[in-house]
Length: 139
Length: 385
Image (cartoon, rainbow over all chains, first blue to last red; front, side, top):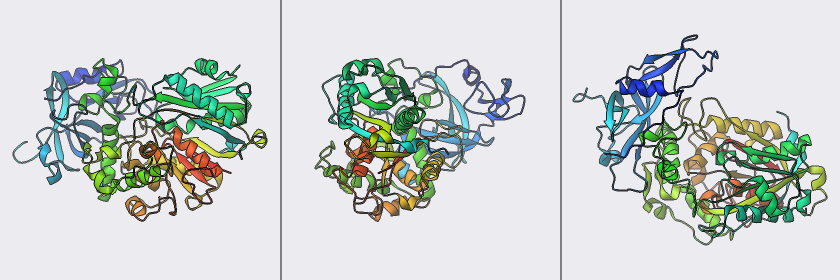
């Protein structure tokens, strides 16, 4: 189990973490012009409205970029695959890819463009939006 | 763009030694560097009336004044962010002089970045609080806890798009260490590197960055003095004109990277910076004689060479492999060894090398160096005789 540093929610992103705790991945949507934004911000950069609601993510997307994150001072700790997921609704989101073999990275166990699906999970006592590959045996 | 900085010049440079353990306070390093730069300029502390540093530099201007014996200041300013703002210090100093807010501005940056707080260590271990600092909720809980990881997640797209491997990235550290090996000022003086040695260094972020793709961690201080061209003509050194100085920030960016916009295999901010520097000076990529590139990690050299138009998209590997960026090549890059080979003084030591190249006094002097482009990614300069 990796050692996870918990988020420190602020007035501008408390809603996001509250939704995660309820098992939902949501993004901020401007109620004046409809633009969906991430990371959260208190004002719409398109129309300056400070009114917003949320849109629940489909949770479905593809890996845009990825790395294998080894703990910098604990080389034996289990590595985490960090991914930038491009969700179907056009939002990019930094997360982790679970259920892949990090020992076979060079054989292509993680690839750009991989189809992935949201899985909200408890990691080291912190509830986080994570992703898993979509394939025949795992969807 | 208004070329107001055309009337200003860097007239003095100073530094401490670059080490892994300075054995003295950051304030002492700042004081030593400032005193050396003022003396190199042929000025006295009483001539200095402005001071500029990084927002995150711990050396307060008033403390530096006491150490360096500067009787009064009329102007202070600090740049945002980290090393991406290195060249913005000179922009602020030049703008102050061009506007009349100050006559002679000292720029300084000093830290014990190896023996004190190490930027490359995990954020949790720097903060001790085990919670994400502001703005890091989107990165830290997911394991992006070091600069190497944050930047590697950007660089991976470049590798994917153009089929670049870590062996390709290894071409740059070999050049940087070749340059450092003949620069007595460099931490890696007389210590060249082979590609084989690069490939034997351990993974920091697999499969993107090995240890030798990362900049050094260094202790040291650097400083420089900016004044008007009119005044510069009466000073001992030939003035090094600040022909252009600008910053490049675009919406939805973050520090020197950005995840949320555009094609991550390119560098939109770098292209924006290059456009400004070329427009302000009337120069084109082919006119540049030497390039100083802020390189926190090797891939950003590749990406910036392409962003500034020195080679085409995806062409940096062949460009570097062809020997172009070595001293004696078509476009020498970081003849001091850069932040990998010389030292990591937050990019400021690369500005000093740009000044030396224009003066003609560098350890690895590039013949006929007249047009020097200095880039810190989010800020840049063009230095001319």
